[in-house]
Image (cartoon, rainbow, N blue to C red; front, side, top):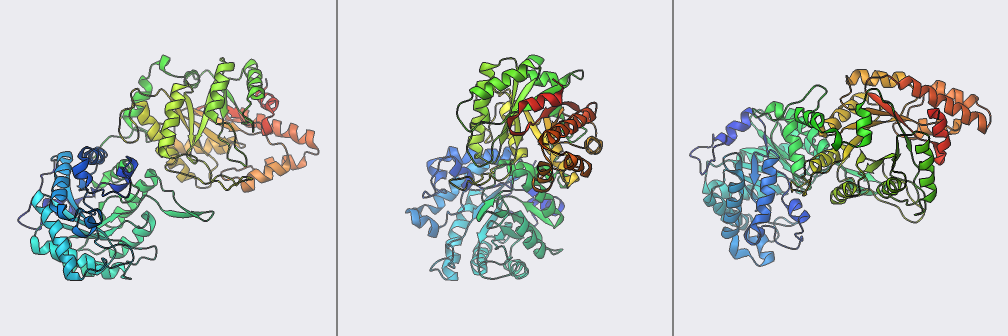
Length: 624
């Protein structure tokens, strides 16, 4: 338990002592959380401490529940200069005091309270029209209010100019020479502040100015920030890093912040290895990002939580799945759990039209042939198609004897939309959901589509697991727990096998209950992958994709990410002369692959992906 520290008598406080011996995880973005709750950006977010305190408290509690040990006050812009833009310049003390009280209530004796102080100026200016002396007075007024209200540590953050940061530190040190101060500046992709100072210059100047903890926050994602703080490293310096939630990537000329909470968590260890001892998040980060950071740096913290079962899965989630009553499982889940059963599924091709009659007729034929399920992919090509959820409901209404597995892609919707769809799937009794990250969409005939990628498949699997416990991504109750059977994708032929193994284990840890592989042509490759994985903790459905021509085989091997078709298989397709011969050879190769994967550890069935909706080919492969 952490003892709150108010106006300590010396600088060697418990907070600084803790940083010297372990990693302290701070919270993430406040502005992002408030914006997501419907607060418009033209309002003063700081004033919400007075007008909507329950909203601010809710954010603090969620970060504390996620494992944050340092909670920052909602006072980033609560200085006289910034509040003047909202006509609130006479309420500095009132707002800052209320903000500290809200954090203290959420933190209790379990977390430190950090008084957040942001810049005075706006982008492109050195605190607007203010001289250093004016800046010092403005900072001093806010610092005094925070100190009087009982903060444990100052967090001066997102400062773009050294002169402004030095003014803030001077103001604080004149008020109290003992209270710890975290000083974080912003750096661009080239590793310089807005004023052109390098990390090496910044760390020297701020050490002299009286900062106890020095680092960087905001502006960039984990990768460039890691490079910045690594240049600040010094044996006598305690480092801090709080990057934005994402590494900017250019996708068809558009900058996207595509880093997931899982990716953010991976970088947490890298920051710690670089010497960072105070680790948090800035713009775009959420309690889920904090939760990942806390878990990843658990080895550097005396407070470990949870525990991993063999294979990397959390023990409580393993037990939760084992204890689920048979009647609460879907039919396909029960079949996968039966070692004597070999499950068969056929992948459907969504039609271009909203008419589903022909597709439903094809499913009737598949069901009559003894196929257990149909899986329905998202369609990322050049024309819009009905969604898997709609197709699945139509199939269930018309063909009650067959199960449906919908593919759900993180690419196309934001996090709210995805949760709404999962709620809808439960309500429509479409319970088997395969969660995939998805590739960037292909350009269509009329417009260039864009991707979303709020989370990847690991993040959404974790969200789905939370919905299964009746809690949404923000920690709010959903009324009833969802009874979804959640699956994930895995690629045994990935070029970076260790990364794929790591991601697969994380998906299982996040709550996956089954997995579907990329197409397999070489059963030995899958066997090797499973050998490295160990006993698969979830049932596997192996992908079988019949080839229809040599050109098709070459295209898949060379141009489709994650696909590997052995030389021998491509040679067989090349030797097949004529369309009929190529089709027959493709079916033969697929049947051999199917026979080869039977009996491998964890393999509970296959799903066949017939080309161009030729479902009779799938039945040939299955021997029906």
